[in-house]
Image 1 (cartoon, rainbow, N blue to C red):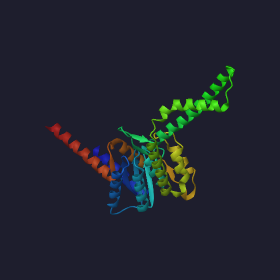
Image 2: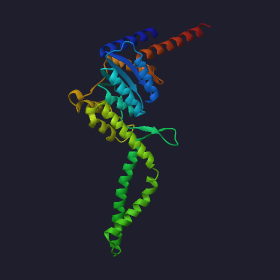
Image 3: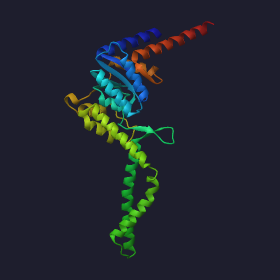
Image 4: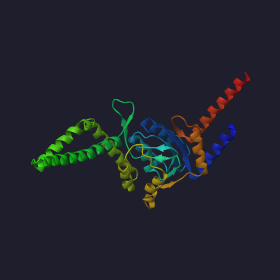
Length: 304
């Protein structure tokens, strides 16, 4: 069973590589400079490069600078970038999708908004620029509603008491009440932090335009049209915004995996459990070498 599975995955790997005329790589990690440099170095070490690259990506996102470095390098070195998405490809991972000529997306695949994440101050997790933007949007909506409610309440109270109050005075009182109620909430948002996240979002937008200058509207849509970092952009929507809304050379081919590609997906789902950046061939060989060692040790223990 062990040898049969190994032979099967090697056969399908070779078949997909030949069909796509592509070097097969896996990027299963957060996108940062260390992993970007690792991928670039491994590609540079290939002695006999194929015409295209097929990059299987699963990532929660990361550094837009590192993603841009990866994407621009791949565009220089290969004629065609084929992105295989079998799981989450979020945030900075979406920047790689913008650079791709073809996106192969399974039923488990998903992209996310082009949302920048940075390390949250005083915490042990990353912070999303969309989270702060949504917080500000809510505060603005609440401020408007609260101002209107206070204004009408003041005017109605004045009229019911038979008092006369000018509209200007009523507006000033309503504004003062609304500000007083919302200041504790808005005060929790660090203006410097907001400026930093806004700057990083603009950086990501510029990177997207540089990677695919003809898709400026797509880049803007991926930045502004979604409410949260975790928002799932599934196959149908990816096909619509990447392929159907564009024409000619500007269009990205979006399709579902073929049988051999689905076999690779099942292999990765079964065996890929930790960070990995490298060739799919390397992953297969390493996995079955480890599996063989475990089987060998198990046999020795049973015989003792």
